[in-house]
Length: 140
Image (cartoon, rainbow, N blue to C red; front, side, top):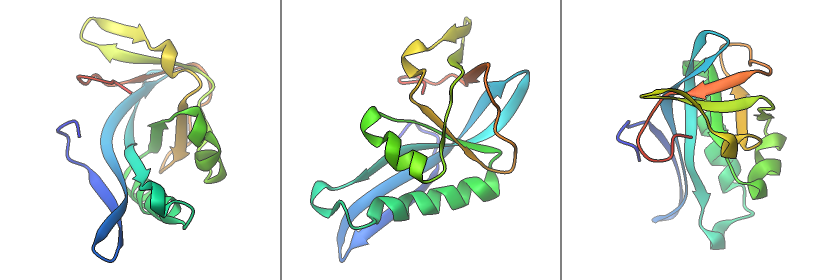
């Protein structure tokens, strides 16, 4: 979606695509450390196919990729999906969020309370500031 490629998980019902999710490589910075991050985007299931485990299947595939290839996983979501991700072991980031912009670190307060992390090959950071790498458009 952002020109970075990534790994896609697709769920089909016959010849109809009913679910999708993507994990792309990002870098998150925390306490002077750069974390190789599997950033989850574009997760969705068509409305008429919800409630049949398709979203769970998409996330299981993406979490497997994160667990084998990244230090942590991250995603930004709306309130309506908090329970879905929390039930799968994603942890709400309770610290602050920022972006490493071309003009320095800038706070992204709209993302506070909407970012979830998933353990990969590293321990999850706790508290403080978490900054994402810069990209055009929606940085988180």
